Image 1 (cartoon, rainbow, N blue to C red):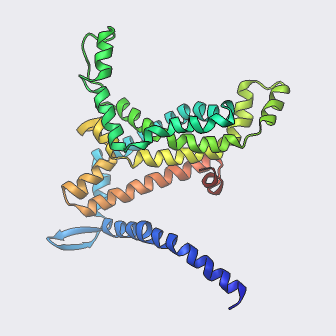
Image 2 (tube, helix red, strand yellow):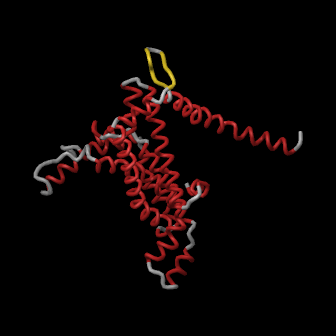
Image 3 (spheres, helix red, strand yellow):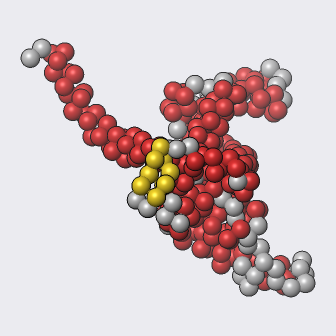
Length: 289
């Protein structure tokens, strides 16, 4: 066997587990989801090809409102996470000593040693009407009596941002670590202000990391089910809850599949739009992540 053929077979064997994994757990389930979304039940156990599941979505205002609301709050949570994560990443990458960076990253990582469920239940304990924060506000006179801090949009945003912060910090740190200190010093020596340096040097250099973090955080937020349900209550109006209801509660898999495809279209469209507006290439963003 020639050397080129041996190399090709070796590469194929190395890639086979990954390709099988992607085919079995990503491609085939989505194909099945799409086929389910294009069928409607016309009789018990009898289905026909139909656009009805999508027609139901477009004809029901509640579904549209929930769809847009989920996209808007996910984008808002992504923006807040970016604003909070940038100073943390800058401190780790540029301010902290190299020997201390591992310790700072560990502090960011520690909350994620426990499951999302435990972390969300922790917020329930803190924010409920008889919880720690409500009693503290009442004790110091901010409120006349303990107030219910749960089941608000701000509470949902708090949970989403808290649960996504690490996934924004890591790509930002990776991007900022490659920024030369000599370049920053030269910019200041030439009379650049802090704003000029950040606008013309830091942000363009960190753009792939920013985009990578935003993509990951947005995907986590728009597809989150646990946090909006627990912190937002039964009126959270999160689109993943509609998907869950159709599949698990109503056993309407065709409608649930249509909602799932629409959620996939939403996330894909917004990611594509973000890449186009930022002028970033997907390859550089993936390297930054």
